Image (cartoon, rainbow, N blue to C red; front, side):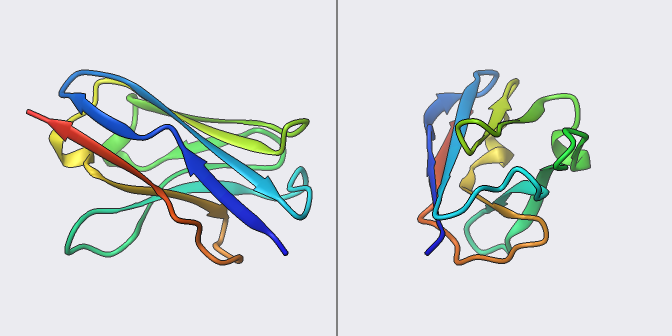
Length: 114
């Protein structure tokens, strides 16, 4: 059974930084594309950043230049470095395969105050 466990969220002021982690258990994902997603209150879940099995990355326009996705295959972990945070980044952040395949984890709450 595959489990995805996100961590690292919290409350931060605008302009601050956070680093999110996603640990996967139950299978190795080194040959899979992985991604971070987020869901703000009252909105649909959206794609934030993708990293391919080979390490190529792509980020959504709203976070381009501020967020960086990375992975450590030896630890079966994906990271999201978030800098210059804005109040509109407030959401629950989730990781999953890309496209999503396994059940969603509990996510990690990121709240950015103005």
